[in-house]
Length: 142
Image 1 (cartoon, rainbow, N blue to C red):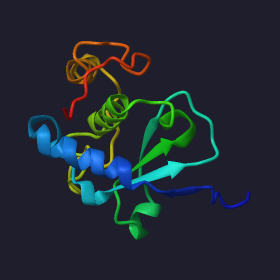
Image 2 (cartoon, helix red, strand yellow):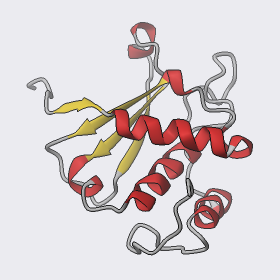
Image 3 (cartoon, one colour):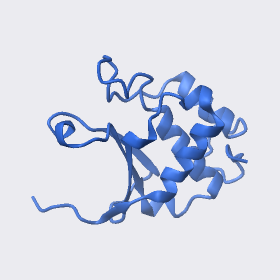
């Protein structure tokens, strides 16, 4: 298997995440942004703009990050700024509340989408449930 090299660090998504954590501390206070790595995937196609992956053993021994957030460039490029902000909010919602606590059972766990997660993101979108396909959704950072 050849090494995957068609990616770059994504500062735009990280900046959006920092702003969301600052604006919505009640939802994202558990997220330690210093332990999340955002990468822009340049060559793979995806129908969704982001994907959250936990850093698991044995890679976690050498890597200070707990989560990777892959941002797929082909899908990301088609989104409006409000939709990009919502995509990052959805990614942050999928990180477990105790996901950054090394002694917790929820360490590096992914929260499966549920009603609470869905409602949190939908509320941030101005009660537009299909925010990914609807460019008129509200911007959670506005």
